Image (cartoon, rainbow, N blue to C red; front, top):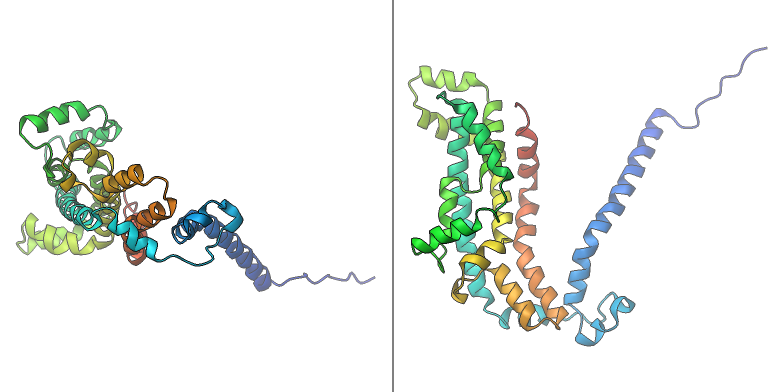
Length: 289
């Protein structure tokens, strides 16, 4: 008797499409779950005080109160806090990129005695909690008269303060750049400074975008540093201003959520436009150890 061969229920292409469809459905559900806190903040910011009392019984605002955003901005000196935050963020990002790139290039491409030992010591600083060095740092800044100014938050960035992780990322990227490029540049008479600015930096744009984004997010959302060193309200950042807003108007959850969304909005916008470079930088920094 001839044995009948059963045809598969689905072809290979159909099975692949089904797997991709299931994967997309799972990812879509996960994205909805991750988006829920933001949607809850947005809908809360658009509710009236009466709708807030209903809780989840009325999740969507019946009549969106877009004026809550304007009211939240006018109840605190929002523009002053925004200016202070931008000043600190821009200078810290600039200083971190300068110190991290130069240090990482020295660890990756230059030959000098004790390089590996100092690199291990630099990485070991990642294990030191900020609370351990807080009191000595505060006393030092008090001695040189930097308290109640922005200097303790800005100056360390230009000298590698807190940039050990970024130095590690950029070193990994620089080590992945073929040494033949720098060797050919040396043969043509280029100095290390020229190699750094004309070869390494143009090739490391994804890694620089990653470090810049990490630094921006850490500095923009930093609450601990400004709380310790900025006692003058005229120098407060948005993080401190948001906490002051919560203390004064904690019962107005609609206005508090509106202010929180405005503080969070720059981070979302920057990450949305820089996500491609961010992913490339994270990927490329692991090419070579």
